[in-house]
Every structure is written in C-alpha cells, then in structure tokens.
Length: 169
Image (cartoon, rainbow, N blue to C red):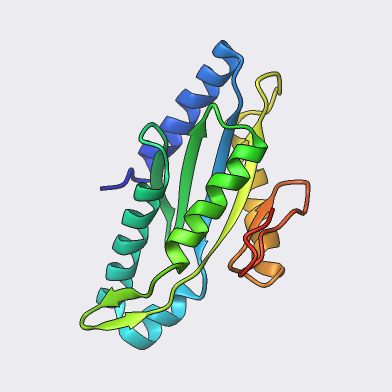
C-alpha cells in the first residue's frame, strides 16, 4: 500500500514544484529500520517482509492523509510532508519513530521489537534547493541519527536529535 521508489520520487518532485509555486515549506523524512539485516539473517526474508509491511502500515497511520509514504529502498522509506516546516517535520518524524517502536511487531506468532532512525530535511518556501539536495540532506541526517545511537530523529544541518525515551527535539 505504499508508493514505490519511482512514485515517491515523482511525488517529491511534484511537491517541490508546488512548494515554490505556493510559497510553502516542504519537509522530507528518510526513515531506516534499525538493525533490519538481523531480522532477515535470523528470522528469514518472509519475516523481514512482514516487518516491512507492518512498518509501512504504522508510518501511513501516523502521518496526515495528504502526506506521502514510499519505499525508498531496502529498509529505507521516504515520507514527503507538504506545507510542513522544519519544526513540524521534526514533530512528525518523532510521531513516526514512536509509532514504529511503541509496540512489538507480530511476526508469525512471535513478536519483535523494532525501532527506526529518521533524518529530516526541510525546504523553506524561498530556498533554491532542488529534489536531489533535499534527499541528500535527509539522508545525511539519517546517517547522523544512526551514528548517534539509532532510534532517534536528527535534522539536517542542525544536529538536533530525539532520544529513545525523551522524544525531545
């Protein structure tokens, strides 16, 4: 039920154009499931698929109905938040992070604890940033979140993070 990579990138391009035209901000969230490779390695790819499906459903349920969620690649997802400034993007990212980690994932009669790391980037309505720059910034922030211990939200260029238990940004 999520957009595929090509579709979510098209959606991001379209929203970038609308952001410029309507003088509105746009945030992008790059979401990565923490330690996902271990799920495939220890439980098998069918369990990995079940985790990806559940994670996608939780993400869709935690965003606004006009936001877009897509599979970016592997265990990475891209969420496009039209009309959302950096502060709103950080708040939305933390809601997604909490939705993923709040309850164990049901997997074939068992349950797995899953967390995610999220990088947030925002294009202000007057920024000249293009789609590629927004993706690079959200990806860079994602890697900072992973380097800082995972299960957190980090904003591009600001180094602000949300802790596992505090949820503060």
